[in-house]
Structure formats: structure tokens, C-alpha cells
Image (cartoon, rainbow over all chains, first blue to last red; front, side):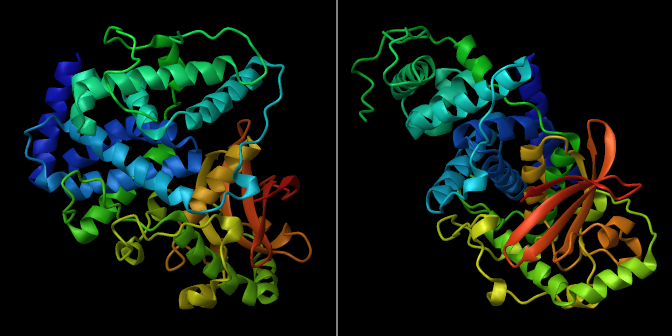
Length: 192
Length: 244
């Protein structure tokens, strides 16, 4: 199914590269959620993620004319999205965060509130994961790319991908499983 | 932190961690946001053509950072405030008019942003709260002439306050003061009747709060303090009043 989808994407990308605006629109619409998800998890902030998503989509729209099909469209898309998120993160790191942009504390109680709280915990935990590890984990576990694909997207050796994912998951599990430094609750996941 | 692939890495199979995958799940974008993102991307590409020279296609974001966009909006707000009392008075005289807005009508004109730094290194983004006084950004002549509120369009589900803030900020960040000021005759009655004393309506949109239609009104207390109100579209009664 995924191969079929990739073929369809590549065909659309080829048409878009030759100036078919409808094909480009279809591609952007089809992948908007995925681009946003990458940006959201890499950045951990909803507004920054939307900004990065917009930048990525503009980069795709402007760069599609040079897409030559040597790599798959999705690989190229993931690279664009990842770089857009990292660029936004660098801009974000240079500006102060207004108090009102900080996540509002979520109360316990209802399942909805618990889920919100859990999501905030995930954002907080992800920000504890070094950026290069975080990106690798996002591409593996959120986007379901295999190590070879991630290596292509990030332009690093597969062994480094493996290392980054393992370390990223470990940090994430430690932070999520033991949010209080004084709390000795066991962690799940792949913490040794 | 070491990045050496040969050290201290458990030999694990190349498998997705389903637990992490579940944690990382992100809800899909709402249709309005998705369409807006797509439209702006197409618009931006159409204005400049495929000119991105970065091999990855990603290192050269074309749009201005949010701070610059908010700055432009703030400039528009100044124009509105500058004519404040007269505008509100005029809107009161008008009384009616349709508050309906369309997303299609809100496709952003990115021309001003097209000239923004393309490297992403020089964009000094500023949040709305710390945007400087917009004396470096000329207020739109059209804004001064029309002096209507900024058209935020349909904001979708605005029932959650945090989401409402984010949505309004996002809409304001994408607002174009050159084209998106409502004509007085299109303003909803609430833009005239609802602003609390000492404030001016600077933006208006529509949305749904738990399925019930609401008017979303952004009012300015001064140049950098804004509040966002949810109003009953029929009575203009204020249902909520939050700092933006």
C-alpha cells in the first residue's frame, strides 16, 4: 500500500514539477498533516509548528520544479519538513517566550484532561531529548521510516541513525517514566 | 552528547516502537487550517516561481517569521485605534450587515513577505506580546481609510481558550493589513456594540463554541495589549473575555 502511495506521490510530483498546479495542490493537501506532525513533535509548540509547516509547504511548492525523481518524493518531503522545523527551532531559540505562550497547566480528572496532560508531558519530554536524537525518533516512530530512509533524509550513516534513535528513545522513556528527579519509579521502554 | 554509533547502543532490531509512536501521534489539522496552509504555499510559489536554490529545498523558508507578520498586524491595529471612536460610532450607525466571512477571501498576500530573508538566520521572531511599537512599519493607507476591523474569517472550533488564543494569533499572524480590513458595512453589529469601554475592536471572526456559533472579537486596550472575546452572535453578549 505504501509503495503504491509512493508511486502515486512520485507521479504527482513529476506532474507538479512540470507545472501542474492541481497536482501540487493535491500533494500539499495530502501531506499537510504529516508535515505538521513532524514540525509539531520536533518543535513541541503548536504555533511554531504551524509556522514551520507553512515554511515547509512553501519550500515544497517553490522547489518542486527541480524535483527530478531520483529520490522518492516522500524522502524529499521529509527532508524539507525536518529542515523547516529545525530552522524554526533555531529562530525560536533566539527569541524570548512570552508567558502566555507557555502551555497552560492541565488539571487531572477527566480522561480528556489526562490526555491533554499527557500530551503536554510528551512535548516537555521531547524537548529534553537532544535535537538530533529527537528528529531521528520522530522520523522512525511517528513517520515509520526505516533506518535507511532516515539516513537518506538526514544524510547520516545508518549506524548513526540507529544510535540516535536508541539514545532518543532512552531519554524519552527516562523523562516520561520518571518526571520527578526524586522519583524512583521504574521506566518502561528501552531503558537498560 | 556523543553521537558515536559504536558506543553504548543496544543491539535492537529496526522496529518501530509502538508505545512511542502512540505518544507522538498528532491530531490531523482541521480543514480550514489545512486549506489555508496549502493556499498560502501555492500563492507564495506562484508569486516567485520555483526559485528555491537550496538543494534540500528546506533551508530557505520564504515567508517572514511570525513576529514580522504580527508586527504588520499591529501596525494595522494602530491605524484602527487612531480612528477608534469615530469608527465605532460609524459602525453603531450602520448597525447591521453580515458577519459572514470566507477562508477563500483570506488567502494571504505574501508579496511583502516574499522579500524576507531566505536563510532563516536573520528573522528575529517576536511573539505578539513583545512586538515593538510598530513605528517602523507604515500603517496601511487602506486601513486608515476603511478603519474596519481585521477580517479573521471562520476560525472553526474556538471552544477551548488555549486553542482560541492560538487560532486567533495564527489568523492575525497571517493577516494582511493591505487587503483584509472589513468594510464598515460588512462588520458585525458586535464589533460596534461589544468592545468594552476603553478598547477598540481590531479584528473579528466567527467560530463555534461547543457547536454553537459565536463571534470572535479581538479588542485592543493599547498598542500591545489585546483581549479576545467570544460573543453571542445574536445578542452580542460577551461569553468569555481572555487576554490574547
